[in-house]
Picture 1: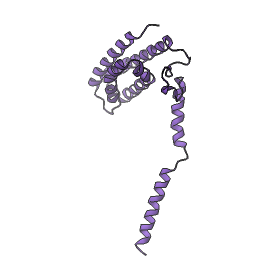
Picture 2: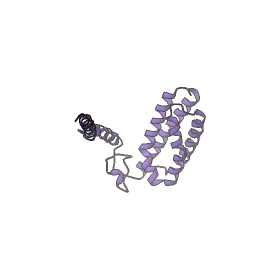
Picture 3: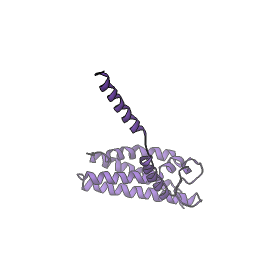
Picture 4: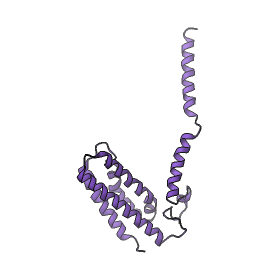
Amino acid sequence: MEKKFPILLASCLISGSLLAGCGSNGAEDNTGNQANNSSMEENGASENEGTNEGTNEGMNDSGDSGSEEMTNLEAGVDTALSNLEELKTTVENSSDDVETINEQTMTLEENWDKMEYQVEEEFPDAYKNIEESLYPLIDEGKKDEPDTDKMTELIDETMMKMTEFKETLPTS
């Protein structure tokens, strides 16, 4: 009996811990969903809009596609180029300010994410070309000790690719 009690107690504690970890009142899940929903609302998108072909993928609030959609894509590219310029300035002038580099990298990533789906769907070659330098840049910019020489090279490459992409967009 003496050996059975500790084993029984340990088994109950482990089982209780596992069951408590599996249960959820949904508060954690809802918080994440609310954040995702509000960011999607800011973009004018609904949850199922990304699965519908021929839609404007949340790039604008109106039902129009075409020139207005391209204008928004052009504005998105302009924003990303501005983010890249700002990041380049920080890397060149304040390479030891890792916190700012990390924040600016996150901002760049967030702004790219807003138009990424549309670029991938409508311009797959340009999408692949841009992301070959953009994602390594984002990965490097998020590090605790980013390699600023490598970042400068990737920023220049990404800026060139985005500028070329912008020039291929139809004018409105």
